[in-house]
Structures are given as C-alpha cells and as structure tokens.
Image 1 (tube, rainbow, N blue to C red):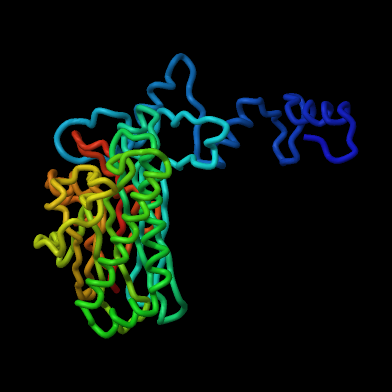
Image 2: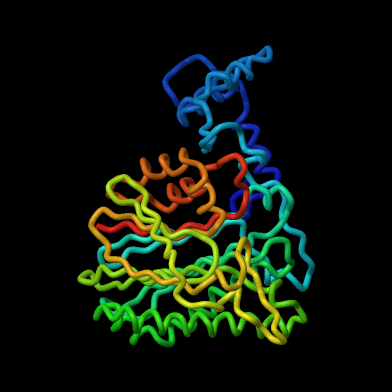
Length: 370
C-alpha cells in the first residue's frame, strides 16, 4: 500500500525490499533469514504455527482443541448449526428483510435483562425468514420507567409471518407506551385486578388491529396473526413485581434455587381473545400451535421476584425443547444458576443449544434478579 503521493514504482520497490531474502534485518544477527524464517517469526508472535509439509496439515488440525458442538440430548440434530441459505427477496422488499438474529440487553433497578431471537435450523437450511419477533422497550425515566419485553411467533408457512409477529409486538408496545404511567402506578400499588383488566383490553385492541391489517392486505385473519407474550418490569429498585400477560403458545418459567418452575397460567382469564377471537364475518384466526379458540384465553400472572431468581419468557420454539428434553433444562439451569448474569454473547449461545427434533425459531428473554 503506497503513501499519498508515492508513485507505483516506489511502491513496487518497497515490496521488493520487504521480501528480498538477501536483505539484512535491523537486528544484530549476521545470518540472513529466509522467507520461511520470517513466516515462523510472525506466526510465533501471534500464537500460531506454520503447517508442516507432506500433507501434515491434517495432523495439525487433529491436534487443535475440539470444537464445542452446543447440543444436548441423544443424537445429532438434523440440520447444520450455522445458517445455510438466505431468504429470497425482490428490489421492493429490501426494507422488509429480517436479520437471522436479534440480540439486546439492559440493566435497571434490581434486574438484568438479556433477550435473543434466532432463526431456527430448519428455516436457516430452507432459506426462510425468521417468524419470531422481539421487542424490548423502555417507557419513562429514572425510577418511574417501565420496561416492556414482547415476544411474538407468527403462523407457520405464510409469506407474511414475520410482519404479523412484528406488528403484534409493535402494536402492544404502542398501547403500553400510551398507558405506561397508569400501568406503573398500578404495578407499584399492587392493583392486580386493575392490571389484569387493563392489559386484557390493550391486548384485545392489538389483535383487533391485526385483523384489520389482514383485511387491508386481502388475507384471511388466520394467516395474519401471532401468539404474543409480554413481560412488564418496573425500573424502581423497591418494586420487585413482574407482570406477565399474553395470548397463545410459548413459555413463562422461573429458575429458583436451581429448579425450573413453570409459571404458565393454567386457568382461563377470559374466553375469545387474541388469535382465537372471532374476526369479521365470524372468521376465526389461529396462531401457531394454538388449540381451539375457546381454549386460548388471555393469560395473566403477577409474581414477586426474589434475589437470585431468573425468569424466562420464551417463544414456542424454545419452550418446546425446554419442556420436552430434560437435558436442555438441566444444562440451562447449570449455566444460569450463578447470580452473575451471562453476557449477551453467552446468552445467545445458551438459547441456541441444539436438541434433535426441535428446529423452529427460538426467542428467549432472561431476567436475572440481583
């Protein structure tokens, strides 16, 4: 590379001086070193080594540290662990492209937040976009702030999968943003019934907008919908209330004293909301993996965090293997039991632990309590 103003001839001369095997170095030795000597010197400086000749490169690779596979359970997963194909797109669709992975984190009050959303192995292999959507947002300032985390999973095998999930996250986010002062007050005051009814109405409105958007696009409501799970976290260090709400499949779990506890609300809070709510002309929309409409109620649960707890909000793609493969639950319990939260990269690697038979998108939100 030439300096500004140097001629090509001067640059060529510089390179010849650098690789001239007869040129002396500035060191004190009298022996002229070879190009191989210089390679070995540089390799030693950076901690590497030059492969030996005669096909011994394979021997060098065999002595390298083994690569961590990042899988649990019996048998290897079907797909490669890394992305294979990108989703196809068109010139007018570039703004709608979805990244393979989303990663975020924060720390407020007594909690540390980690959030990751990753395209599933099957979608990576087939060149399909990520269907899961993730929203992390803060409304308000200082101790009055309220953090919202929303996870949505759209219907499988639809071209509008991610837009529907993204719309669900955005619209519930807008609703919470407009009402966050009242919500924060209700959370700190412990007004559970007010929170439950208020969040139920906000969720209904978000799904109403999804149905309206489906009509605008000329799609059936069941093709433009998503399961939605949310977590409200006050930034006030004196308030350890954690509020979960949503509709549809997924998981809400707590790791306490090294043991996983499923906090999923079992009793119906209200019939006929969200993906199972009747749409225009009696149409009924169904999210991914959802049961009959009457069995998909609005879900709400308030919990009080204890020092050392870890909450996990997740999409069906992560909840499935957590509940179905004990080895994954045990491995994550071991990794997350320490009170020090993992860094962003470590949390991403944890959520990507692979299990044979589970290849859907994975979205997980971890909350570590100080």
